[in-house]
Image 1 (cartoon, one colour):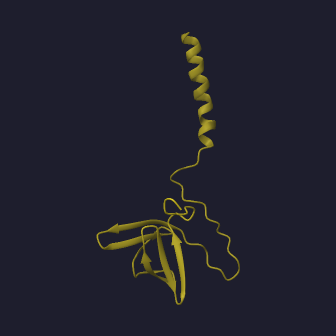
Image 2 (tube, rainbow, N blue to C red):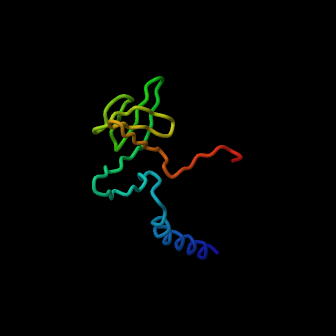
Length: 108
């Protein structure tokens, strides 16, 4: 009985690395296509939004940007709980914290 249990444990432990390799890394940044067409800007990645009292900051491509500060050639003009707006002249770019999530009200 003990030998059979030991054999089962060894078999499970031997299979564990191959099962773990199929699991995605929960700490990895989401995959974003870096391919851009001619004349298009590369896609920026919003990774976090920090709110401390009245001060709001966004982490864009690893850089901390406060509301009103400049990021590359744009100004951060709005921060909400799930997205930010960058303005370049008249052009506004919205970066979403969870672009793959579609928020809907309950019952609709």
